[in-house]
Length: 198
Image (cartoon, rainbow, N blue to C red; front, side, top):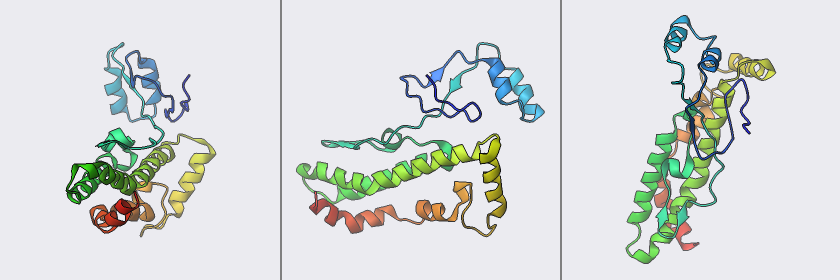
């Protein structure tokens, strides 16, 4: 049974399939009824029976990204909703950290520990970015009610020169977290300490 909110089309329902080919054209038109006439005109051209539903899913964090000498990266490790444009950015950070940790070892026996350093450097950071993307999507797509009014009030009160903002993509603190870190340099600095502690 779906836990989707009728106004936001978010769902936490885990299934083995991420698409549904039996979407309803009536539901599609109803969902976008407040959009401009041009969008509505285009949607009316969609043939009945050709509506594909695609739900954006939020997955619980994995317990680990490393199994032996194999690790997950990118969306396989931390699938990310598009509401902060961080999917590729976080995958690039994974690659940068992997490049550092694997360059630090010289024998096959150390691969597992090097990958655990990668996980230690990346897991909580990536999971925080994922949670903020999810929160941003929910916050920006409120269609009515007290939550939307409270959000809109925060927009009006936001400092145009920067600071806290309901749109997390322009929130100064989150920008600093996402863009103010050289993760490869941090991994260089912390590698020996983390590696020795494993």
